[in-house]
Image 1 (tube, rainbow, N blue to C red):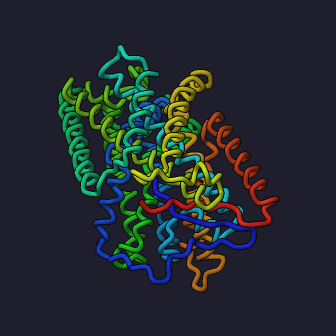
Image 2 (image 1 turned 45 degrees about the vertical axis):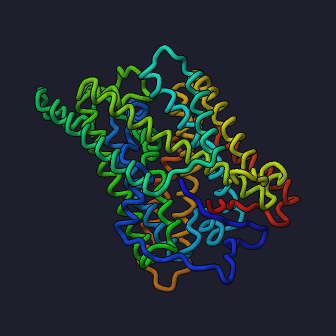
Length: 470
């Protein structure tokens, strides 16, 4: 996920100012460049990693959860796009919330995003470890967790980062993998005997349907769409940003939603049940084995592994850079968090810290999940969505406030759409399981306490949630 910058104080909220004579970025990105960027950012294989968890939680109604998530994210994407018109160079949830609602709410939103940044490399470590175990089942999970946490840390310590061209090639390759899976699934289904009920069961199964279970599944399924807000960070490089950022954000959510629906619908038809996966966290690759044999199993497993290594490395760097920005501004101890290693010019202390947290979380979440139900990956994903939903609710309320409460030309859509987006996100947030909500509440409580101590009761400059440019 991509987030912008905000400085919050007790009295006012202003985006970090740009130098007066800084060169302007060239506006070269068209609408479809932005859409392609958004799809690559989210990844075409996004629903594959959560398929087993959502299927188990929603009792087989994965398609329904994906569609509910798409509705919530389309409405939220519309609010993001409209707020990007008002703040074309900021592009961050906490900027929108802090400016339009209240600086304190902006701070809460920013603090929630810090949790998301730290959790992202953690859940990538968990998923990569589970995928690697499909190739080498004799190697225990903790060994793989150590390996991938060390890999992400080592790559970032060397200053290794992917280029835009590499990301484009990876996005195209992953799309090819999706096509291969859909082709294998169609071939398998043509040889199977299915009734009308079999084709409708992924949407609604009267024997297992539960509103609460489906909403809980949908609260996890929204992880499929996380990252669409990154499009708003390209406002200064886009042609006609006031129009194209909005359209690209909505079109990206729509495209990912349609693609994800096809993927999970085919997977549910092939598997035929919502239970019995050899491993819940990597259930989709086992569906691939059933649809296309060992070849498709190996291809899907490798595709997901490569995609999550890339995501984990990028998320690790993003978390380290966010902590560096907070250290540089004095929000965190500057000597540790604000230092830069001179050879590779990276925030080495933060890279090492994030790696240690990712490893500790990958090991501890798996243990906690066994006590509370679910898996470590599921608990981490729900905790990440806890923070994301807070941001989504805030952006919808910010859009409502700007365009309806304070707007000069009020339209029905300015009232209905952002409030509907807020309500759906609110219900999904409430539908998260108790362990995730407890952990999220503890994090928010710690953030409020930390902010109060730092500002002597919120009476002076608070925190800068600034992610410095690479």
